[in-house]
Image (cartoon, rainbow, N blue to C red; front, side):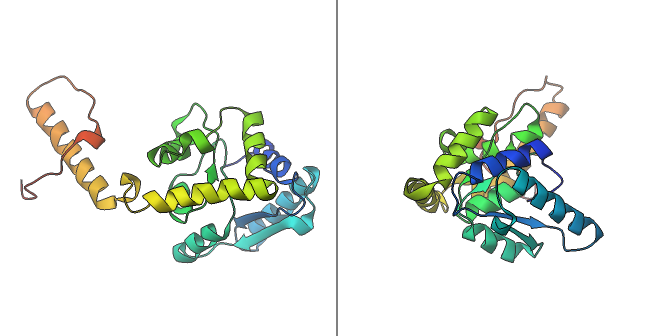
Length: 211
């Protein structure tokens, strides 16, 4: 997770959710130990203790390459999204790895990306919350005890079932839809027609790549 896209208040929400289960650990990737990385690590440890999570339950790891990052995502039990900027490509990496992602969208576009990604997998009603309190309560339900583990396993099974069929992960199809949309916009412009909404999901690929 990018340590620069969430607030002090949001970090406390994470800790409040994690504190409910004494067996739960907080795990975050931060910058490599250095002047800035060391400061971030220290602040996270302080916020954890302020939120009732002992520093022994905080695991801070260095950044790594994308392949190892996705492997790490698969090892996590649940990922709690950032705020006010939600996960973008990270959200897709997490879900591709099969790990539940809990989010709370806001008004700005940058805070709604993760909820849109979840909606593309039909998980928005399961993992999207609307208020701060709902975010903490749902996180606790997914974290605490055997029931929490069953909830996480249900989400993992769902992702596994749709991973190879969901349009979200079909990059070639997405590229072709965007190409078709750009072509349509050009045709509309050249015909001097008023603009209209172009829905990518309804577009067929461009048949002639040379056109």
